[in-house]
Every structure is written in structure tokens, then in C-alpha cells.
Amino acid sequence: MPALLDALSAINLLYSASGFFVGALVGFTGVGGGSLMTPILMLVFGVPPTTAVGTDLLYAAVTKTNGTLVHALHGAVDWRITRRLAYGSVPASIASLLVLSWLGKTGGHAANGLITSALGFALLLTAFSILFRRWILDHIARHTNDMSDRRLLWLTAILGVLLGVLVSISSVGAGAIGMTVLLALYSHTPTARLVGSDIAHAVPLTLIAGFGHWLMGGVDWLLLLSLLIGSLPGIAIGAHFASRVPDRYLRPALASVMALVGIKLSI
Image (cartoon, rainbow, N blue to C red; front, top):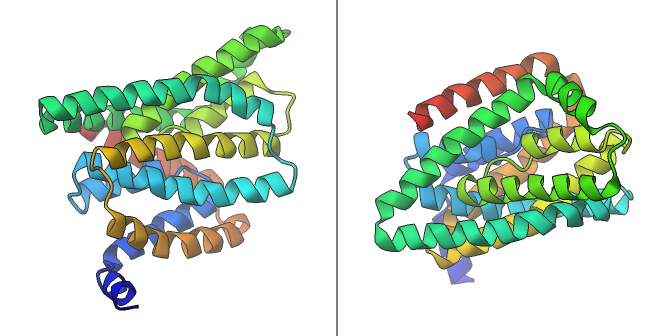
């Protein structure tokens, strides 16, 4: 009990407030938490890139596990798509973690530089996929009509490779980027099942990547607890009021902010 009280007294309420803010935006818009949380930790609170990404990955694993259970109970997960994504993302995640580990041993600045650059690139991709989703869907659909299942498997696995690299290095990409491509590749699959499949795939990916960052010393457990205390009720409240939020204005505004932050981190 004393240890628990000490841990609770060490919780940073500013982190919890940030978690609530990001959680509410995720609930409102469905935009991935990593696209918002990691930049806030780095740019607002000055958390080192390796710690911000590692902590956010385990934060995502917790929140997405809950989301997966809800979708699975409603039969809204296509495990075939989830497996296909994992065929590419799991090996890519392990390879990315090995590169980060090697860079960390040669000098922390190299690892932090790679993470910052990858985060900027991932944020720009995320912003682009949000702002131009309809154009992307139409463009991909023109090249994927009547595609064989074998080719679809390979393209899904390649998408998994991209997500595995981006998520493991930057914690960003599994939401907006993955969903945009999945909507184009599996245009005949109900959107709810694609959302559930994407979230289900993110659980093992973020767990593996988060575990790897933890082994490299890149997880702050008190920071993680502080974020979860704020974000879990934030997500619930945001989801409850989602239908009342002018999504056609909020999502482009968030995407524009992500683009600006991505440009700042990439320069």
C-alpha cells in the first residue's frame, strides 16, 4: 500500500491532462493517439524522443487492446487481414528495433535523430492521408480492381512492412495511414470490420515495439500511468460526443497541425 501511494503521489497531473486532451480528440475524430501524443511529449514537455516513442507504444498497446476486445465481441475483426498485416509488420518491427538498438550503442544522438526524422515523415504522411483520403482511395481503387487474392496478400504484407517500420521508430502510422490503404485494397469489406482489423493488428505491433523500447530503456512507467489516467476517460467522453462534433472541420484542422509539426521535425 505505501508503494502504491508513493506511485500515485508521483503522477504528473499535466501529463494526465494531456492524456485526457489527446484521448478526447481520438474519441472525437478517430485520429491515432500516437500522431498527437508523441509530438506533445517531445515538443511541449521536452521528453527525449526514445522515451516519448517507447512510452507511447505501450500506451497504445493498452488502449488498442481494449478497442480490439470491443470490436471482436461485435464480430468486427477480419483476422485474415490482421494476419496478413502482421506477416509484414512483425519482422519489420524487429528489424527496426535492432537498428535502433545498434544506433543507441553507437551514440544516443543517432537514435534520437532517426526517431525525430521518422516522426516528422510519419506525421506528414498521416496528414496527407487525412486531407486527401478520397483522392488516395480513388487512385488506388483504379489499380486494384479484380486483383487476385494472392496479390492482395502481398500488397497487404507490404503495407504491414511500412507500418512496422514507422510505428516501431515513431509510434505513428497504424491509424490513418493503415486505414486509408486498407479501405482501398478491401473496398468490398465493411468499414467497421476494417477498423476492427486495423486496431487488432496494432496490438501485437505496439506490444512488440514497446517491449523492444523497454529493453533499450526507453519507457517511463510513471509517465505511462499518468497518460493512461487521463486518456482512458478522455477517449470514452470523446466517443460519446463524437456525433456532435463538426468532423469535417476538426479532422482537416488536426491534419494541418500534424503537417506543420511534421515539417518542423523534418527540418
